[in-house]
Each structure stands twice: as C-alpha cells, then as structure tokens.
Amino acid sequence: MWRAMENILYLVKEEGFVIVSVYNNQGLGSKCWKVVKKTYNSIPFILKPFLIFIVFLRLWTPTMIKDFIKMKPFKTWKHYYKQRGMSPWYDIIDWVGGYPFEVAKPEEIIDFFNKKGLNLEKIKTCGRGHGCNEFVFKKN
Image 1: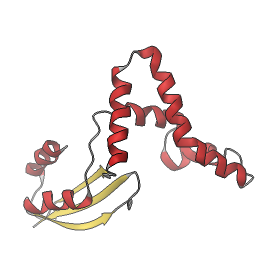
Image 2: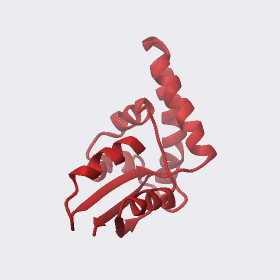
Image 3: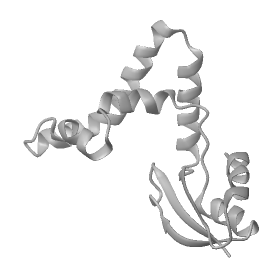
C-alpha cells in the first residue's frame, strides 16, 4: 500500500490532487480480519463456502435481527444493492477474499503525504469503526 502511494506521486502536477481511500486500522479487529482473509485465500476451494457462511453470520445476523425487530424483515438485504452497487452476498465474498489487506490510521496517511509535499484538503473518516477513511490532498 505504501509503495503504491509512493508510486502515484510522480503523476501529480503542481496544484494537482491525490484522492485516496484506505481501510481504517482498528487494531485487533483489523488483525483478525487479516487472518480471516489470509485463511480464505489459502484453504482448499471446497472449504471456502464454510468460511464465507461463518462470516455471513458474523456480519449479517445483527442486521437481520434489527430488521425483524423493526418489523421490516430483510429490508437491509433487499436495499443493499442500491446503496453499495453490488449484492450483499457477493460483497461478503469480495470482503472475505480481499487479500492482501492493508490498513492505516488517518494520521499515518496524513503524515505520509505531508512529508511528500502534499497538504490535506479534505478528510472523511469512519471514526473508530470499520470501513475506509477518505482523503483529498493537494500538491503545493
């Protein structure tokens, strides 16, 4: 990830922008996801559906329960495509199989680009949760 960000710098003209989105470092949570992803990519094909099902339960059980409590069963599942642009099932497969998996804290990304002569113009973080932090840097 760091090498990739280094490699794009020569493409940025003066007053140009760099826009990046990087998975938020959640500490232990990120380390656990990395193990899941590495495991998925190393196990035999026949075992992959079992791991996907376990992750499905981990990711979707709380949401399904909330939808049922609100008397709107499967609402989130049904509307997922409109929000994310892909089916929830394939999003799970994409998430589990996405390896290598690299993360960073916002300040690490900001420090990296500041040292390369770019200034932060805008940031959107996901707080302490999972997801990506989004950055816009400008070369001055």
